[in-house]
Length: 380
Image (tube, rainbow, N blue to C red; front, side, top):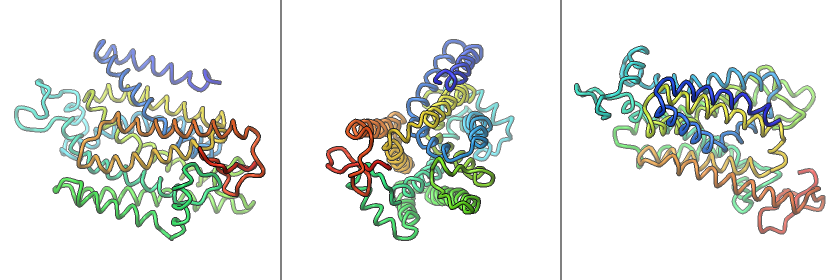
């Protein structure tokens, strides 16, 4: 099972390291390995959330995600996306932008002798709008989950009150818009206020549109046999519903990768090394980990993992918004997610040991947070 799922990722990783060595020698190989390890170690929350969506998709759309989706993640986000930023920011054509990326200033500075900005500088300058878009998209995802009533809760002391408050219509939009305004006015640099507002609004619109279309078509296609639209084994999204879930998953994956792509420039500005490390190694392993979680039924066995991943998303969204005005180390960003998911995993294991066969006498909410006397019903 493990070799079948991760075998391709290992093979692609070895090939990427070989290409890196041929491209730039031992230094390029080392940088590629570092980027790959960082991407994998800091993307567990991405894999968990991807798995929660992927398990709702039919086998056909799962295969599309693992083939076409990989190409989008590897080439689209890790290679074309940074170049596209340079195209838009500098007015250069694709060939000129690639040439700028492959030929940084000789002294390693941020500008060339003629005063024109380097590739790395153009990417870094675009961080506020990138962070605003990705941050608001992820924040909407987090709010949509945390403000929804659930049978199982993890941090019950806060999740239950938030679910009750979440009955207010469009509350997540109100909260997200308020945070966007606060960020644009008080955190973003003065010359970036309008840019952050527009980018953040586009992030919210993208989430509402893609998520809404997925739910719309899912309802239409499932209504004949009264299946609900949640992530169950009975209702697998196909057709239009599968397409919009695929589209939603790609935008979600892209939002997760924004900070990683920008952060990679702290290690190297070479787009080839970034694509090899983040894409061919990192993105491939995240895909394999996603498949592993789905095939093994890990999310069903460790029921708090999904909660921990969504809390990690909320933390990442806030960090992205804060980073618009103040630099935040990518290590800090990643560790927050790792800690939250690790805590969710540990509490899931504790829950399973306390109630290995479920507990039919549990409370109606079906949760047993650490230190609680409440029990989980057998149907949880």
